[in-house]
Length: 295
Image 1 (cartoon, rainbow, N blue to C red):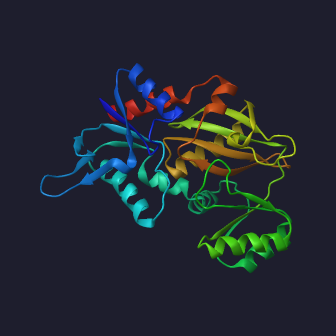
Image 2 (image 1 turned 135 degrees about the vertical axis):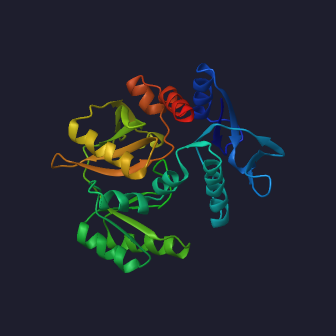
Image 3 (image 1 turned 180 degrees about the horizontal axis):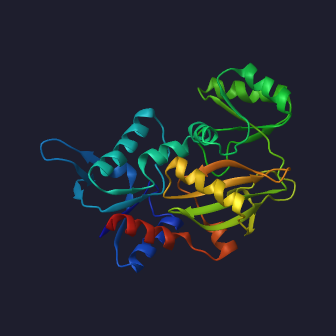
């Protein structure tokens, strides 16, 4: 069996290295591929995937990143490549449609809300006055990039004038404004890691003193978290709605004791979760991918 771990970094990242090792321990031939060097070809000779000048034969891939997308055309090429692999019978994890849905916060939370998964009140707009009105109505909001990760670019705002400035700046750069009512959290949120249709592990992500962001990349610490029946049901609904084969799902604990899904990460990092729980997701992901490829 031949499996590819796909990213765009010049050298394999830590998570990619752990996946390669996990596949190799299962007796699988696993290699690292940069997505910019993968090409799709089709015509009289059928569908072929190339890496550089060489045709590659793969049974499955794990997509860790699409890289920094600079243009719409680049995004369409890379998603089209994943779709060609799927048409060729290669198992793609996460699938191309799931990847697009989860990376786009607008689409993912829209689908979750439509399917009765609790999410924060959200507005996506290109009208600066709508942003100002949201702050006046909700008090405190978070303005986020529609596509982003690690918490970078997210701004908490409770002043309409500041919200106006932030929104005007984003709109001047051609970015729609994604505004979410701020959920008063107990200084933490929960990262729930899923593989297949089950929960693998969960960890509290605790914000640094005086900070509100709970991303490990921004200094949060992690501790093991308990998943109760309500949270389990919510998380597994997220997996089903977004068609995710593995994911890191971020959930806020509401003041009333309920939960709100903040986002679903389609290619999550797991170093903080592994330190907190002792669970290495790479091994579970590798086993799951091999099982899918053998079906």
